[in-house]
Length: 285
View 1 (tube, rainbow, N blue to C red):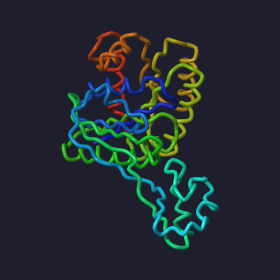
View 2 (cartoon, rainbow, N blue to C red):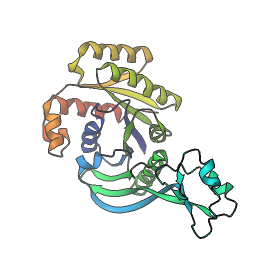
View 3 (cartoon, rainbow, N blue to C red):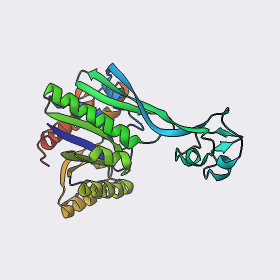
View 4 (cartoon, one colour):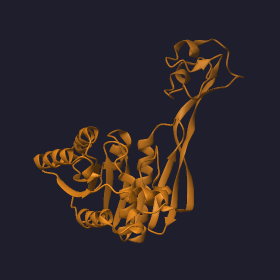
């Protein structure tokens, strides 16, 4: 069993569209949407929900009005100004627990938050594990770890060959949680200045965790000069460019119809994505 994570240093590169097509091409795999802050792979794959589980994480202070003596110490010392009129604002509360420790009458309790949900579903392409983080909730890295753990469990139980993960954008905590321990990473970029800059950053994260990476340049023909810059950078870094996918309106049309582009059209984009999967499925960590 091998885990391949698809990442992009910035949003809008077409990462999820490519993952959807890879899901249609790959055999014997489980799919994981690790972009828990803005999960959208399920919109493309139209899953049938099988299991929904609550995700509890983080804490919020709660004041017991019957025990509270209104000494004002918690309001005075809360550096986040989350306590006013002896009531905790759950949005402003950072869950640090300081008020809990300094309350002289033990009138403050720390209660765990319902931070989101994670789901197990079936699709025509195989099982899918995805999640939804609640509004203004934190610990997305922990929820990503939960999604990956469940995907790995399903892969082991069903003796599947691959875990194909749609990772989050950027280089933050959820990216680290998605990448650590994976066998390989596919970095999707676009030929723009911001795309080049953020590719360099996410490649640095891959190297830090010792994960083998290859690059896919999506919509390469929008700016072929920048495409050459990306290819030159990859050559200097010893990184393989696995695919150069052209711009095609068929990708957007397929997305609107809720289909992977490899099932919607048989043009050059689909051909390049097929070649891409043939290449990355053999990447060794």
